[in-house]
Length: 159
Image (tube, rainbow, N blue to C red):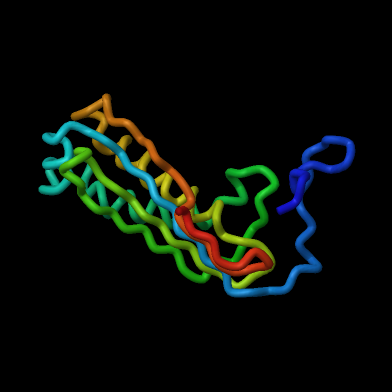
């Protein structure tokens, strides 16, 4: 691991990293997160009783769309041709709430961690938006990179 930040030049100014000399490799990243809510809200989502519609279906599409627009949302993030983005939700009564996992894949010179993380965040924000009329105390949390592969650093997973 380098001792210096890759997005900061010698003078301390922010910069986009030049990845032109890197080899193209298959890259993937998996991120996770959750949203806690009242059990009644979770049940309304499960039974598709939210006035705005099918929360999980809309949030899944929102996550995919967000992953594709990551470079427009995150300064200095490279635009990438994504080959696959998957967003899955798992209801969890023990929260109570929903757990989300997003996986992004490409073949390129830089990783897709930011795309997977963006998919998780926007998916969870969409759940909040769609269900807030029932539960304004929902809490989005625990968003993190769970695993990445490809590139010079190879495979990494959260211990």
